[in-house]
Image 1 (cartoon, rainbow, N blue to C red):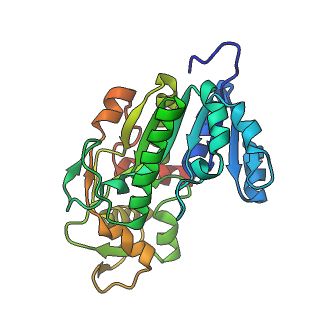
Image 2 (cartoon, rainbow, N blue to C red):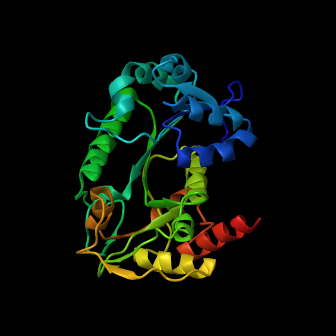
Length: 293
């Protein structure tokens, strides 16, 4: 980004997880300072080894670090009491707001709810079908209100199902635990973590505001992804299981409560994005190639 020439750009990453870490790998070579929060000392050590300044929540002073930031990325999910940053660090956010050049909030396409396999875009009314989706809708509204009252630019990124190195179907297939659950009409949208990173980087560079769906071009049934991953590994196709009687955890079953196809036109048009992995096949092939190195 064309940051203030007198100030080294500094990203404060609240909830420095999988997607935020991918973004950090793009920004650190550009000379950025990145502070990432965590609740575990082991993660703090990992951050430090990667060049990210760790901030251990509950021990370190968030306000001082946040007030030195030029950019803020919020990845932490809301809990039963709402968004943790707005709840616990609102006064620090108010103090930091005048110097924040950009704020990004990572939400989920779960805010749209169930559309029986139909298409949704950023203007589709929000009708979440799960408690997680309902909490995300409220968190989005709370961040939009904070942006209005505190005067910082805000971009909300609604992420589809995330996969990438270390997060995908290959490990389960090799362990023999992958399941091919079939629910007629069920489709999901997905996104490779490296495409999330390039979207966030473009949002920062353009100081983009508004709401963006972040997904690839090809929503498909989940069993299709498992089948292709098995083919790439040369492993037997897991047997098909009917969704209705299948034994699943409540969390796993909740992912099948919604079926929709998510449009990404605004992401491409306004952020200038050309997807690295426009469909799950190209993404899985790249992951498979990386495993061979």
